[in-house]
Image (cartoon, rainbow, N blue to C red; front, side, top):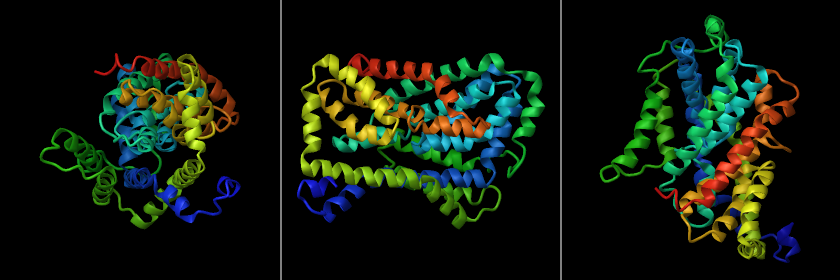
Length: 386
């Protein structure tokens, strides 16, 4: 519509170029989903969940710490909150409730911890999307993202769950996750996870000797290993389910890429950048705090790309890596905010709560805390350059 109104007709070349702008993140999403579905189908994920409950549920502090990292794990690898909510979150929610954590607290904890998984390294799609818009490579972000995501995730988990955990319900919790496909824990079973993390660490620590083969190939290697380390799986069915799960986000990225290309063609994107650049500093920070989370309530990815890029350009001259990390944090908050509040909805769904707004309300104080942390990171970006 924008192209036609601006008298550019139907520019197929620009639409196709726009769709392929985000080919790298699209490949990461699909291959990461494939890896997660493989370790879910071969029994490794459920086996790991059972191991966590057996070993740590009698030690509340360790249990909350391990549970937090376990729920974050899929979102850390895929860059998408939903994958954590619907895999590790859905897997552990019944056990959490059995251990005494209230239903609404469980839903809110799963949603918020999954959100921090999306922000955490090694894969942060929001940073990648903003970076592609300003030609900034995805290098050096692990530190700033980790400093924000892990402490906030752990704080949230302890605030929502620690005082409710009852050690006496250990056996009941185990029964809640014992159904379905599982396997006996072993080094062989967990080998795909070990391989993926080993490759991700190796290309960063030993980059003089090992080329960066890229996240998509790493996930494919992990998926191939997973086909031979646990229960027998049908790779065709797993690949199909992976594509279906990731398709809404993949389609969104393709659509937004085309949309941004047309905004550039018509000059609207430039107008948006110039408008943001001309804002007084105070209004820039107010705009960051309001526009990114609010528009993120429609789509965190759209918020990062449409508003994140001009705000980053308006703050050039400071530490761009730290600023971009803070912007990604603010954009990500839309996943638990209306109108879509997609992760709050899924969080309510996995615990059987019909009114998702109860989960949104429970998330609000934490969301505000996350927003203030994100804004502080942006404001003191140079001080956080370490």
